[in-house]
Amino acid sequence: MDRRTFLIRSAWLTAGGILASTSPSLAKLALQSDSLRFDSDLYKTFKDPASIYYPFVRWWWNGDILDADELRRELQVMKKAGIGGVEINPIQLPPRDNDMGMLKEATPWLSDKWIDMFNVTFDEAKRLDMTCDLLVGSGWPFGAEYLRGDERAMVRLVDAQELDGPCEYEISQFALFAKVDPHATETSPVRTMKIVSLSLVPSPMDNIDQAIDLTDQKDNEIIRVQVPAGKHFFYAVVQVNAFACVINGAPGAAGPILNHLDKTAVRKYLDHMSDTIQDKIGPLKGRMRTMFTDSMELEGMNWTTDFREEFIKRRGYDIVPYMPYMMFKTGRLGDVYNFDYGVEKTPRFKDENNRMRYDFELTKAELLRERFNATYLQWCKDLGVMSRAQAYGRGFFPLESSIGYDIPEGESWTTNWLKHRLGEEMSNEDYRRGRGYTMINKFVSSAAHLTGKRVVSCEEMTNTYQVFAATLEFLKLGSDMSLISGVT
Image (cartoon, rainbow, N blue to C red; front, side, top):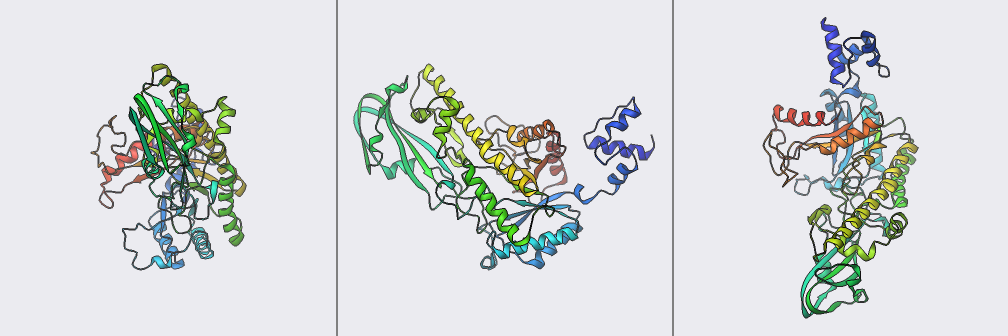
């Protein structure tokens, strides 16, 4: 085999192709992919690839402190370094950093100046033959200061207090709200709390009929409960509206996170963004490659105004009376830290609660797919741009949510606060160890393959502890994990 043939076949194998070694005609057929053929064109592409085959990078617009000449200069530096495209990503300037007095010059998201700077970036990128993607909103998950009422995300949380009767138990609304605080990464200053239900149940509990309803006290400043003899649990379900703000949101897009379970709110938010930009600079179609959604870390959001009605319609029964007893205790980002919370349940009642919890999570995932994913995909289609997203997170279907996107995206960190050792096996006790895990990438790449897509994107080499100090060996090991999981 001559060197030219070897290079061509090696390039194809690297891209995941299959060669039929016993049949040259089958090999040639297998190598046909759009304009790429098993001929000089493929070798030319491999030898001198177009800019779309070069690495793309996330381009932080730190604090949205923007200057036209600086934007052009940074694009030119990246082009010279071999970068083929950028993801424009407005982000908060970390409070611990020295802003050198420049934050006063921050350009609010979607302001006239911000859009002008956006236009400057497009024009320079086009001149340099570079591709542009744009983040929706800022930070994650997206939202904004201007959201109102039910447009803001909401969550329902549970508290259970063990009591030994006979006794009188009392608790203030203030103390109860403090106990169920969701501990959002960025707490919203406009959040509101209300008690949804109160009940007292014996332990162990065998059925819902044993619950003593105390919800008539939900508006009392002080809640008082007469506890009969024996072991009991006092339950409270609290709803928190506008409970969290965008994580690391830049000015103008740093308010409460959007209610992703409300289709009208989702489309209104997306249209506001695209209409504001297009009204000033014209259609986005043909000027940018994709709209992008970063991590869907919804902080445990699990409720919307019509959730109860949708649940009854889809599952055939009312979940609300059972919610106190089937909910887990959660903390930051909705992480469950107690799977065996509250009253002791008989095996029969525990099994019933488990099935109800499955129905609850299924309904939430269905609504997210229908009201967020589908709405987002249609919006991109209407704009004439491709869709790209990390379409996973707590509450989403990990496979199905990625299926509709033009460019589904995974995620691979090389290290995190655990500072793992290279080659260290991931423990069952702490699945985050190493944060180089790539299980989600398998779902994302499977979604691409099931729909015939060849491009699987990845937020790659995210590294917050060894910046400018990571070895090439370290980076290669992290990259190899992504490749093995299906990222192209």
